Image (cartoon, rainbow, N blue to C red; front, top):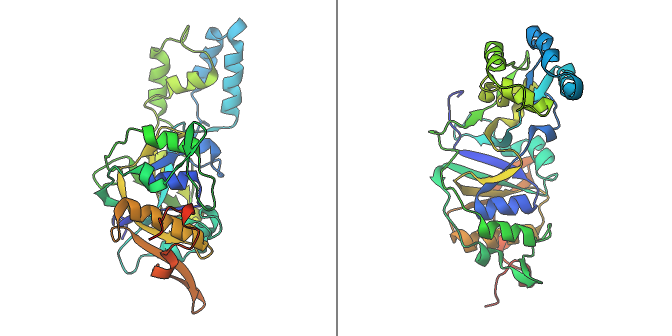
Length: 330
């Protein structure tokens, strides 16, 4: 089972603008590791930083540039540093009958999907995203000089509408098995933080211009660490305690939304997702895809356990407050 590819990549989320953005544009937000709750996640070790470089640096960074060296010593004092690329995480779902069912674990719903009030978006590695009629599906209204949409659980944003109306979408399916920028997280009981290739660091230090190009300690490190880091190894390295998440990761530009090129294959609503949210999401999907291509499910409590079942018709039908999710009266 270790070599199996996921049939679906799952994103557990609270209902917010980033979730709406995933639904209507196929974009995911690449978070900076600096904002992760585990400071060792996506980090590399600086414990064995070459002593000869440290001995040489005072000859170059002296007098008015001494602050660069002081800041560098501060960075090295922590003995670790996180990579500066962005990361978006998914939970892998397998078709194998013996594989763990990610929908039945309480941790993913609790940590990432607003205590079961949110949703889980499933992306297909085999079907590509296609451009959709965003303005029609969100049913925006004119507010001042812009447009705004109404959504239960989150305020519709003029900023978001402006973004998705103007974004150029790349349709390359980044979750396809042929792509190399999606990596499976490897969980280790004996956890250790990877370190750079120090021979490459030494070669970089000798070759780059240290006199005029360096303006701060971070820039100095980035110059001498170029090509010395195995990014895939760094982003795939986590402690065994995180294993239940069965995580896969894409890496790219930090703090930026980008189309991952994968079609949405399913939506699953949490145990506490309210009916307005279910109807709103069903409305968006029906406007985009029609009925059928995206599977709609919900979590229920039955026989003393969690169960995932198809969404019933009554769950997705609009109420009398049709203006919220855009169903016109018949």
